[in-house]
Image 1: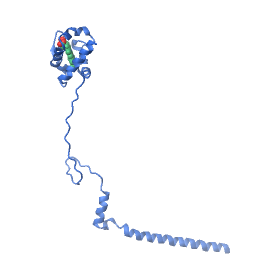
Image 2 (image 1 turned 60 degrees about the horizontal axis):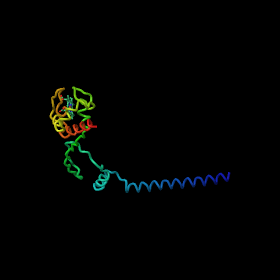
Image 3 (image 1 turned 30 degrees about the vertical axis):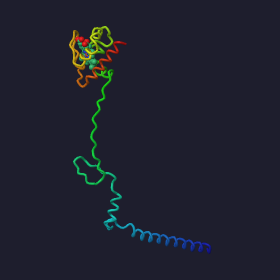
Image 4 (image 1 turned 135 degrees about the horizontal axis):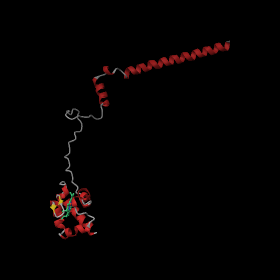
Length: 171
Ligand code: HEC
């Protein structure tokens, strides 16, 4: 029984000290908090401005028609570059605008694979062929529309397609 009493006293003492220690920490923490964690709304304007500055979003999206309010780097619009019209190569033009007739003989067009149909045409000279391809041509077998009907092609592009045709025929 005596031993139990001794243990009980010791136990009470330790628990008591821990409780005092805990209350001490609580009081200390509340003190510190009252110095640093005051209500935001009761802080000085200066303090609030600093906080607002730190929390400010990095960027802002302006919708069309909205006035710019925040001052930030104003980027002057650069002049839009002129679109560069890359001209198509002969084979590209041929595949896009000529093959539909000259590949399959549509509208009685002389087929690229039919060398005999081109013999007399080639003898006119490449310049005449180019002229006929660019400006259109109505011959004995049918109607060759100017630029094959594709007005967006440049003269040079159509001419390079004729060069391609001539090259293919001479192979
Ligand atoms: C709508 C069909 C059609 C398309 C597309 C077409 N051609 Fe033709 N082409 C013809 C026909 C039909 C002839 C034959 C006309 C004739 O001799 O009566 C012809 C003839 C030609 C000739 C021979 C002209 C001559 O003096 O004998 C050349 C060169 C030619 N085409 C080039 C082209 C090129 C290059 C393209 C593509 C840019 C093209 N063609 C697209 C139908 C077409």
